[in-house]
Length: 228
Image (cartoon, rainbow, N blue to C red; front, side, top):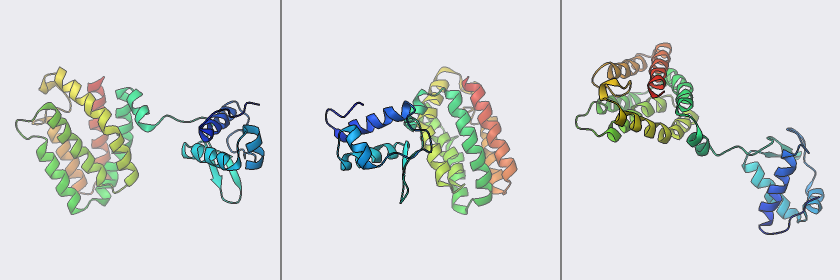
């Protein structure tokens, strides 16, 4: 059985444990042997085993249950969220936004405050400000979408949305730089697209969650089509 040879001992021990999990030695839900067993197998002390377990727990592979032991919760380390988004096709990113923003719009219609509505209306006005660069226009658009998600008062949805912003922002800028302003679904701010956003804000204002969700989905679905 392979043992740790070099520093960092904890990193090496974590790598070896992960390799054994990947190889199928333990399945999801299985309990790992104790530190006194794993230490000799890996050629390290108990404190190093504990640190290796902490590393893998932090990466979602293991879970320590007080009084019960250490259990396998995943068979491999997932990619970091930002790596996943960088590698994802932009259409897949928009599909993620549909899932997040459709639910957020419905919740916003139920939970919005007067402060939330003011933020949405300011952002709606900013989308049609004259003399904006492409980057400024896209940023103003994202501010409005974020204001809707923020009005849902769900920290998880907001954090997920914020994770999407850099990927979507650059795609939007690239698209608008390549197309005439009037042809993009999210760029004709003085016409139909601005009205679509205004309708979403009105639905949230009027506490119409079903309508708000439908409007959000329709807008983002057309955005996905335009980015294809």
